[in-house]
Length: 373
Image (cartoon, rainbow, N blue to C red; front, side):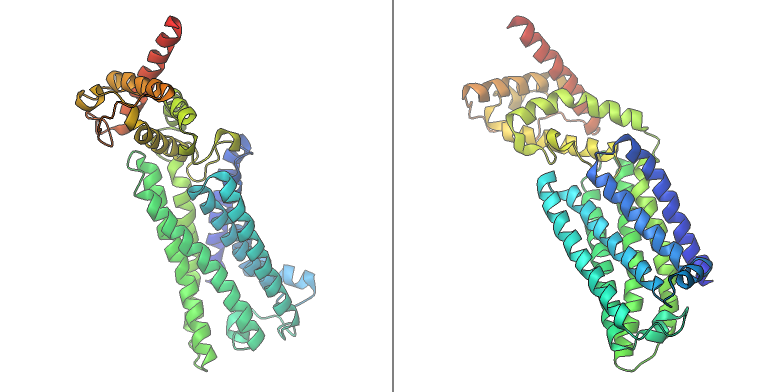
């Protein structure tokens, strides 16, 4: 049963890796997507090495009993580092995300180095045992080793659950991205059940209470959690709205976004110079960020919009003309001092369709301005 449970987790990891590496081939410069693929690899390697028919030959080839456990646990720590790296690109502009990623990797590598030192000097290499936790968790050096492992893994899982759920609340216009983020959060929490069970076992063992079933109960949490987690991260590409449709909408928003970005560069989470890095959902997430940034630009432009924008119907063509006039007013330093709502009147329920129409009308207005210039 142990090999079946972890074998399913390994299979899910390699499927997710194969699926996303195809996207990575098309966008190798995407730092966040590289972090996602790396997370899949580390998780898949960890689960693969845990399967008995794989674990035993590798452990025998190393010539040091139980040393393979270090590779398994280190892979899971590095998996959590990749997740945190990924989260940084969800939340922050690329330069700041890179700074945070460097910190995460530094801490992760220090943890792996400390774990390596502990397991090398710990008295766990006399004979091979498949029941590693039950046999060695009560030893002082191994207790510290396993605590560091669980803390690092828990940090990554809880962070991704929080960040995924938070972003899901902001993606109403992209239902498959929203579903994927919620499933990702669920998978991370299920996986955290592994840490809870194993952590509880360590706590009880430290006070001389043995509850060995906790070690076994943790296994399905790990495998099922990872399968749900991987499904969530790949789900945005499953929806009936194809990547071509999403990419078409993304490109249609370019004229409006570019004009607002030129006027207010601070609206961009990722600047064009950073390759428009994205994290989850590829085009879905890119499209979501562009919509958010357009609204941020509109809010920044409000003091310069004409009075007609407050009393108009909010039709796309009318809104496009108001934005074009507002940009001219800003360039000329003219502020009509009109109090406007956060969003123009008449915005339809399908916000994405409305924004695409506004952007296309805006492109027409700008083209007419150039013709008369």
